[in-house]
Length: 180
Image 1 (cartoon, rainbow, N blue to C red):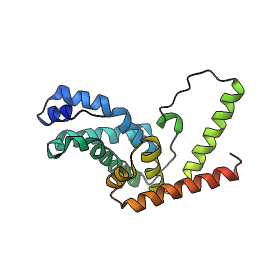
Image 2 (spheres, one colour):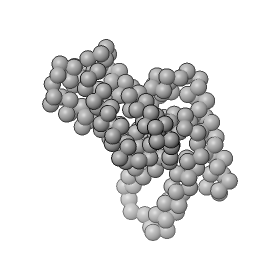
Image 3 (cartoon, rainbow, N blue to C red):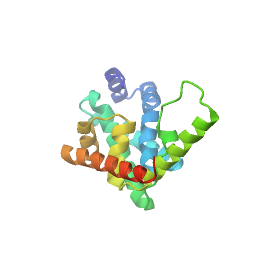
Image 4 (tube, helix red, strand yellow):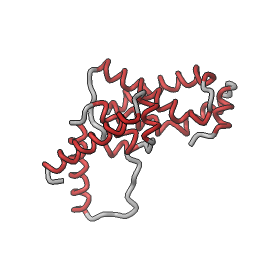
Protein backbone atom coordinates (compact mmCIF):
# COMPACT_ATOMS: atom_id res chain seq x y z
CA UNK A 1 0.00 0.00 0.00
CA UNK A 2 1.22 3.46 -0.87
CA UNK A 3 2.01 5.64 2.11
CA UNK A 4 -0.10 8.74 2.58
CA UNK A 5 3.04 10.79 3.29
CA UNK A 6 4.47 9.77 -0.09
CA UNK A 7 1.32 10.98 -1.86
CA UNK A 8 1.51 14.27 0.04
CA UNK A 9 5.14 14.72 -1.05
CA UNK A 10 4.21 14.03 -4.69
CA UNK A 11 1.41 16.60 -4.43
CA UNK A 12 4.03 19.24 -3.53
CA UNK A 13 5.96 18.45 -6.72
CA UNK A 14 8.70 16.29 -5.18
CA UNK A 15 10.13 14.33 -8.15
CA UNK A 16 12.02 11.89 -5.94
CA UNK A 17 8.76 11.03 -4.20
CA UNK A 18 7.09 10.59 -7.61
CA UNK A 19 9.86 8.16 -8.63
CA UNK A 20 9.24 6.19 -5.43
CA UNK A 21 5.52 6.21 -6.16
CA UNK A 22 6.15 4.85 -9.65
CA UNK A 23 8.42 2.12 -8.31
CA UNK A 24 5.93 1.05 -5.67
CA UNK A 25 2.91 0.95 -8.00
CA UNK A 26 4.41 -0.10 -11.32
CA UNK A 27 3.86 -3.87 -11.04
CA UNK A 28 0.24 -3.57 -9.93
CA UNK A 29 -0.49 -1.09 -12.72
CA UNK A 30 1.20 -3.26 -15.31
CA UNK A 31 -0.73 -6.32 -14.11
CA UNK A 32 -4.06 -4.55 -14.53
CA UNK A 33 -3.23 -3.08 -17.94
CA UNK A 34 -1.73 -6.31 -19.26
CA UNK A 35 -4.60 -8.37 -17.92
CA UNK A 36 -7.01 -6.28 -19.96
CA UNK A 37 -4.90 -5.78 -23.09
CA UNK A 38 -2.70 -8.91 -23.28
CA UNK A 39 -0.04 -6.92 -25.05
CA UNK A 40 3.07 -5.94 -23.08
CA UNK A 41 3.77 -2.90 -25.27
CA UNK A 42 0.21 -1.58 -25.02
CA UNK A 43 0.23 -2.24 -21.29
CA UNK A 44 3.45 -0.28 -20.86
CA UNK A 45 2.09 2.60 -22.95
CA UNK A 46 -1.11 2.66 -20.90
CA UNK A 47 0.96 2.65 -17.73
CA UNK A 48 3.02 5.60 -19.01
CA UNK A 49 -0.16 7.50 -19.88
CA UNK A 50 -1.52 6.70 -16.42
CA UNK A 51 1.60 8.09 -14.73
CA UNK A 52 1.32 11.26 -16.79
CA UNK A 53 -2.27 11.66 -15.62
CA UNK A 54 -1.23 10.96 -12.04
CA UNK A 55 1.57 13.51 -12.20
CA UNK A 56 -0.65 16.23 -13.64
CA UNK A 57 -3.76 15.52 -11.57
CA UNK A 58 -2.57 14.24 -8.20
CA UNK A 59 -3.12 17.67 -6.66
CA UNK A 60 -6.85 17.11 -7.31
CA UNK A 61 -6.82 13.91 -5.24
CA UNK A 62 -8.51 15.00 -2.03
CA UNK A 63 -7.89 11.84 0.02
CA UNK A 64 -4.36 10.41 -0.37
CA UNK A 65 -5.57 7.08 1.07
CA UNK A 66 -7.80 6.75 -2.02
CA UNK A 67 -4.78 6.70 -4.35
CA UNK A 68 -4.83 2.92 -4.91
CA UNK A 69 -8.38 2.94 -6.30
CA UNK A 70 -7.88 6.22 -8.17
CA UNK A 71 -4.78 4.82 -9.89
CA UNK A 72 -6.52 1.55 -10.80
CA UNK A 73 -9.45 3.52 -12.21
CA UNK A 74 -7.12 5.57 -14.42
CA UNK A 75 -5.37 2.44 -15.72
CA UNK A 76 -8.61 0.55 -16.28
CA UNK A 77 -10.20 3.39 -18.24
CA UNK A 78 -7.07 3.93 -20.34
CA UNK A 79 -6.80 0.20 -21.04
CA UNK A 80 -10.48 0.01 -22.07
CA UNK A 81 -9.96 2.99 -24.37
CA UNK A 82 -6.84 1.41 -25.90
CA UNK A 83 -8.71 -1.86 -26.35
CA UNK A 84 -11.61 -0.12 -28.12
CA UNK A 85 -9.15 1.74 -30.35
CA UNK A 86 -7.49 -1.52 -31.35
CA UNK A 87 -10.78 -3.40 -31.49
CA UNK A 88 -9.65 -6.29 -29.36
CA UNK A 89 -9.78 -7.83 -25.94
CA UNK A 90 -7.46 -10.80 -25.56
CA UNK A 91 -6.43 -13.26 -22.90
CA UNK A 92 -5.15 -12.89 -19.38
CA UNK A 93 -1.93 -14.93 -19.24
CA UNK A 94 -1.61 -16.22 -15.73
CA UNK A 95 2.15 -16.58 -15.95
CA UNK A 96 2.44 -12.82 -16.42
CA UNK A 97 -0.34 -11.57 -14.15
CA UNK A 98 0.06 -13.98 -11.27
CA UNK A 99 2.76 -13.22 -8.74
CA UNK A 100 2.60 -16.70 -7.20
CA UNK A 101 5.80 -18.71 -7.36
CA UNK A 102 6.35 -22.31 -6.40
CA UNK A 103 8.53 -22.75 -3.35
CA UNK A 104 9.53 -26.27 -4.28
CA UNK A 105 10.69 -28.08 -7.40
CA UNK A 106 8.07 -30.25 -9.09
CA UNK A 107 8.57 -33.42 -11.02
CA UNK A 108 8.57 -32.96 -14.84
CA UNK A 109 5.16 -34.67 -15.09
CA UNK A 110 3.68 -32.28 -12.52
CA UNK A 111 5.15 -29.27 -14.33
CA UNK A 112 3.67 -30.47 -17.63
CA UNK A 113 0.25 -31.02 -16.05
CA UNK A 114 0.28 -27.56 -14.44
CA UNK A 115 1.24 -25.98 -17.78
CA UNK A 116 -1.56 -27.84 -19.54
CA UNK A 117 -4.10 -26.74 -16.92
CA UNK A 118 -2.84 -23.18 -17.13
CA UNK A 119 -3.20 -23.19 -20.92
CA UNK A 120 -6.78 -24.46 -20.64
CA UNK A 121 -7.61 -21.79 -18.09
CA UNK A 122 -6.18 -19.10 -20.36
CA UNK A 123 -8.24 -20.44 -23.28
CA UNK A 124 -11.34 -20.38 -21.09
CA UNK A 125 -10.61 -16.79 -20.04
CA UNK A 126 -10.58 -15.82 -23.72
CA UNK A 127 -14.27 -16.69 -23.90
CA UNK A 128 -15.30 -14.24 -21.18
CA UNK A 129 -17.08 -11.02 -22.15
CA UNK A 130 -14.85 -7.97 -21.70
CA UNK A 131 -16.67 -6.52 -18.70
CA UNK A 132 -16.62 -9.87 -16.87
CA UNK A 133 -12.90 -10.26 -17.50
CA UNK A 134 -12.08 -6.81 -16.09
CA UNK A 135 -14.07 -7.40 -12.90
CA UNK A 136 -12.52 -10.85 -12.44
CA UNK A 137 -8.96 -9.55 -12.95
CA UNK A 138 -9.43 -6.82 -10.37
CA UNK A 139 -10.96 -9.25 -7.86
CA UNK A 140 -8.91 -12.43 -8.28
CA UNK A 141 -5.51 -11.15 -9.34
CA UNK A 142 -5.36 -7.72 -7.77
CA UNK A 143 -7.40 -8.41 -4.60
CA UNK A 144 -9.72 -5.42 -4.89
CA UNK A 145 -12.91 -5.59 -2.84
CA UNK A 146 -16.28 -5.62 -4.59
CA UNK A 147 -16.86 -2.05 -3.41
CA UNK A 148 -13.50 -0.92 -4.82
CA UNK A 149 -14.22 -2.61 -8.15
CA UNK A 150 -17.56 -0.84 -8.23
CA UNK A 151 -15.80 2.50 -7.84
CA UNK A 152 -13.04 1.68 -10.34
CA UNK A 153 -15.40 0.49 -13.07
CA UNK A 154 -18.15 3.03 -12.27
CA UNK A 155 -20.84 0.37 -11.95
CA UNK A 156 -23.21 -0.57 -9.11
CA UNK A 157 -22.03 -3.04 -6.48
CA UNK A 158 -24.68 -5.56 -7.52
CA UNK A 159 -23.42 -5.44 -11.09
CA UNK A 160 -19.86 -6.17 -9.91
CA UNK A 161 -21.05 -9.20 -7.95
CA UNK A 162 -23.13 -10.38 -10.89
CA UNK A 163 -20.26 -10.04 -13.37
CA UNK A 164 -17.80 -11.89 -11.15
CA UNK A 165 -20.35 -14.62 -10.42
CA UNK A 166 -21.12 -14.96 -14.14
CA UNK A 167 -17.43 -15.00 -15.06
CA UNK A 168 -16.75 -17.79 -12.57
CA UNK A 169 -19.80 -19.73 -13.78
CA UNK A 170 -18.67 -19.45 -17.43
CA UNK A 171 -15.14 -20.55 -16.50
CA UNK A 172 -16.38 -23.51 -14.47
CA UNK A 173 -18.67 -24.62 -17.28
CA UNK A 174 -15.96 -24.23 -19.91
CA UNK A 175 -13.33 -26.01 -17.81
CA UNK A 176 -15.80 -28.73 -16.83
CA UNK A 177 -16.47 -29.45 -20.49
CA UNK A 178 -12.73 -29.90 -21.00
CA UNK A 179 -12.33 -32.18 -17.98
CA UNK A 180 -10.29 -29.68 -15.99
